[in-house]
Amino acid sequence: GAVVSQHPSWVICKSGTSVKIECRSLDFQATTMFWYRQFPKQSLMLMATSNEGSKATYEQGVEKDKFLINHASLTLSTLTVTSAHPEDSSFYICSARSGVGNTEAFFGQGTRLTVV
Amino acid sequence: GDSVTQMEGPVTLSEEAFLTINCTYTATGYPSLFWYVQYPGEGLQLLLKATKADDKGSNKGFEATYRKETTSFHLEKGSVQVSDSAVYFCALRGYSSASKIIFGSGTRLSIRP
Image 1 (cartoon, rainbow over the protein chains, first blue to last red):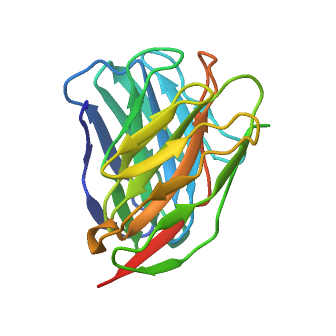
Image 2 (image 1 turned 30 degrees about the vertical axis):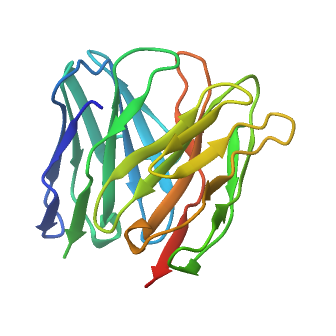
């Protein structure tokens, strides 16, 4: 299957700083990328959907000014957690899809963010 | 809205036991159904999928059949191994161009040697 690479795999940052997570589709063009958040022992919660070249669509309850998503190219999307706080500590996973409709989405390996 | 209800875990089995993890869904139209697996410290991997009623998805000895009449997509494996220990997520995706994947709560599976 297609490969989605997420970087970094883990990051520790201080409260108040910003952290950027990258999601790349290595061997296909991702017209749509999804960002999920996973709390310990819980399911994945969709945070936002981004389409290349347009603004991301955020799920209800997700602060778009805190979680900045940029999908500037067909192979790269970034999630920036701004002014991070300990409650932002979580496992963040991206997913990428190449087309519309019934096409498969591929997942990155996830990024574990710890805010101290 | 669309939703997925998944058997709660954790599930602990002995090696070579038979596995069933139940999954039912609520959706309009004809969604695609998936099982994803997450090994410790890793992201999700697609395990199997089915895109229409009566389809059977299979991979690595796991199987699931898309049952529209019971709105179910139960995961089964005849003989589990220690290496199958992971968290399993049932998921669905609608067919519209704006469809997103909706996940169940996940079932943690532990296999004893």
